[in-house]
Length: 360
View 1 (cartoon, one colour):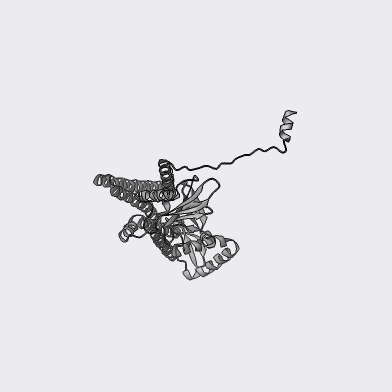
View 2: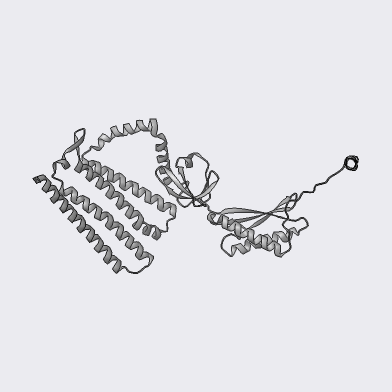
């Protein structure tokens, strides 16, 4: 076995030893952290999760940095791979740039996941503002990291004008849809015609906005299905946003009673249903007040509509169901019939022809 083979074996054993040592230190820190915070409260669990997350990426980057510095003088590591103008791109420079970008990405996620929520809770910001601010913070950190990584590699940022021209040509020929959705996503974050947490109707599908990503928005339907909608859709099409500006929503509950029923009593009973539902904090009874609309005289029933207003559009289905249960019960208790459609069929003979045919 020659010298280089022995050298590779030695290098491999050193790397394995360092990796084992780093992982052992990680395990010790996690072990003592759990011992110190043995309480099972949610806050302690979140703290342990944050410690584990930080240790994971610290361990990974410690290993990568050791490898980077250990092989820094190796010919294959600092040799030119490709040249951009007068800049020689080497494996070491690429790894450094990747480390900067990935480190910034992980640091941004830690801040947005574990530190910013405390600030949001302190200032009582709504969910949409929280998401917008978190996204802007993340994008800003990543842009700065990319600029720093390019400068570290040695690429002159003024040379990016050529790259911008190439990107512009690409957008003109095939990337216009992606660019449109990306710009639309930025507009959605700033203008906020929709925001995370809003209940919207898209193509007659009811759901809640869960994420506004760079290209598309994720909507979670009431059936727990996820719809991926391009961001440009919300700027080009008609979208119903039940949570926009004033979340107050009017519900219309139709009801028909039999002819001959006391309509004044029906009105009072329906208003009583609204008052009973108010006690469960689902509907409003003061401003605006519930209202009973006598629609008219139907084919089989006297038709009414109960108008009630709710503060949270997410309670539409539950509130409608509760009110229907209450209406059915209160009308039955007061002997008011809810009719069903009926049709009378009359058979008439024509000049006794049918009877004559029967006799023959």
